[in-house]
Image: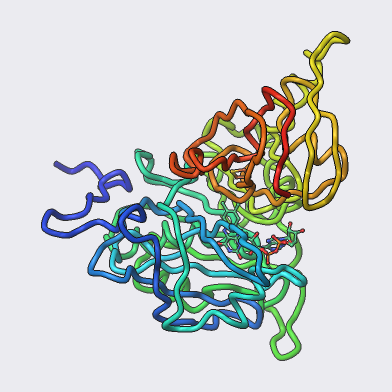
Length: 370
Ligand SMILES: Cc1cc2nc3c(=O)[nH]c(=O)nc-3n(C[C@H](O)[C@H](O)[C@H](O)COP(=O)(O)OP(=O)(O)OC[C@H]3O[C@@H](n4cnc5c(N)ncnc54)[C@H](O)[C@@H]3O)c2cc1C
Ligand code: FES
């Protein structure tokens, strides 16, 4: 048996342990808050009772926040590995003006609790049989790949990981010490940092500028042979995708996740374009009344409530646009929708009139509590 051990071999929760089930108790207690950089903190959370988490590295959880009398949902990738099952960590960048990231940074302290849903998401390396990976991250997009790398380190997997992280300055490199430490102790893990500029107290002597093909060829000459995972801000993701497409990379081996929420995913845009094309002059048009904004907008049959709202300039919070994360969950106080979700809502919430607006198409006129 000389075959290399791959990431696919991460074992399930050992018997004798109880799995954390949000249906049983959805609250998690904050155990610790750790500073990572000047604007990034890690929050370590545990279940209230002796339970263990079951997830795959790269997955995220949706958390519920009560801020200024409003209930808000946001997704955060689990930055800790599934090999440390007693807690989950999330690593959050402070976004100027953002309600949740600022609340977490300023208010969320050890002993406080948050509601959470089960880990989900498909941006994982579970089941991948490859042994050669290239992780490309920008800013807070480092978190899923950090969970994967921590798992590879904890389990001493023979996974050859080129980890390229792009940051504005040396002060902005998240997990710099830990990645370097893992790289020193396990030669399969090879971190490289690229910075755009110096910090006030550190002149950057490493690779400088933005990620491009020339830099990637120097850092990782065999990049076309590796399974690629990319996460970061929208311009970073676009540049990375263009780079790989232009280089003739087999894009079926290219995996990406976006934390960019204002823009719709490419897939969602395509669906909207298809639905719009299918609209004929005799298509039904429904009236959608948004009670909080006091607006009523038209929604042609086949278009999601989210898209109709967006076209009319009404901002509905959204993240995944795929019915996964729960960020767009809203109460529909009157009317019926056809909702095809991906697990971002529970049956009891549906029974209470809640719907995910990103994946709900109206079947009648609607009144929505937004
Ligand atoms: C699957 C998934 C996983 C995520 N994982 C993480 C994570 O591990 N760490 C993390 O910090 N965030 C993560 N996010 C983003 C997170 O859900 C929040 O959107 C973010 O914390 C901002 O929330 P907010 O309420 O403060 O601001 P919002 O009102 O949501 O956002 C304000 C503005 O900032 C932009 N923005 C949001 N997040 C970022 C960011 N991280 N960097 C730069 N600009 C941003 C938004 O596009 C918007 O224009 C994830 C999002 C998704 C969909
Ligand atoms: S935006 Fe994620 S479920 Fe709607």
